[in-house]
Each structure stands twice: as C-alpha cells, then as structure tokens.
Image (cartoon, rainbow, N blue to C red):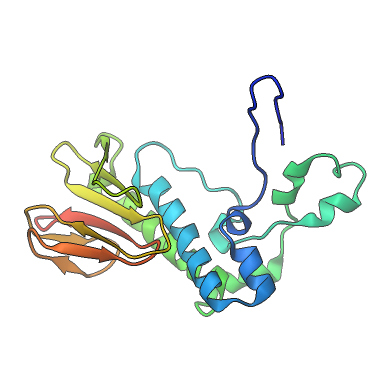
Length: 201
C-alpha cells in the first residue's frame, strides 16, 4: 500500500494477528505455530505498553482479529488494501475474550494485565524517561523506565530462548510473581518478556 516509486517507500496492510502469523497457523492447524504467534503478538504489544508515550492498539488487536478479505468483493474497496485490516465487528469472536481457552481470551487477558500494571504502577508515569539498552543480544529488546532504571524491560523477539544477565540487585517481574536474586541470569522463552522492578517497589 502507498508505494512511492521515487524513494521506494511503502507501507504494509494487515491486522497485528495476521502479520504475526496467527492467521496462517489457524489455517494449517499448526498448534506450535499458533503458540508462537500468540506470544509474538503479546511481545509486540508489550513493548508498546512498556515504552514511554501514548500506546496505540488498533481496534481488534486485543482479541487477535484476523485479516478480512471480503473487501475484495466490493468495488468500492477492492483497490484499497487497507480494508483488509478494517473488518466488520464479530460478536462471537469478541465474546471469546472471556474464554481463556481461546486465542482471543489469552490475548485479552495478557493485554489487560499489562495495561493494569502500566496504569497503576508509578514507575510507568510519563515523567519517568525511557532509555533503550544494548544488552549485546540482537534478539532481545531492552529498555528501562525511571531516572535510576527502576524498571528493566526485557523482551525476547525471537523464536529461540535467550539468556540475559540480570542487574546487581534483587528484582521481581511485575507481570508475574517471579523473584530474581541479584546478578543471576534469566532465560527468556521464545517471545517472552519480563518487566523487572527493583525489590523495593
């Protein structure tokens, strides 16, 4: 969409879920690929929510809405690929957000948890700056929030487990109950993330 022949600029179309591989995994019934796709979606949204600024979630991202190719059947929309990520509301799919056994339920629960932490924890206040870090591993996105790096966010953006050394202080994951002693290493499963706060918080 929007290809500019003069400078090669172009944009992509598609819902987050389809771009992350959930559509293909559901089509083939590949359970392992579906698991990775769900983790990939949560990880990408997690980076958005953990970083500073105002996060933007496209309508439907919270339940894993897939591409809608019916736009091709309408002459009014067929020539504009952006309609692929503008599906009609699906009441049944939306209702699945309350069922943790469904993809929609898993995504909705994980995203709500991250939003709850971000909106209630003072370390994610707008006044706490974001600093992007190089942890020596291209598969891990890392950032801190706060003047004294009170929160360390680690996100594995690969399909392989990654091991990262932790800070020289005890910290706990705000997204779980996990506690990590000072100076240990953490193994991040594929597309896993940790929002690690200093124990004092």
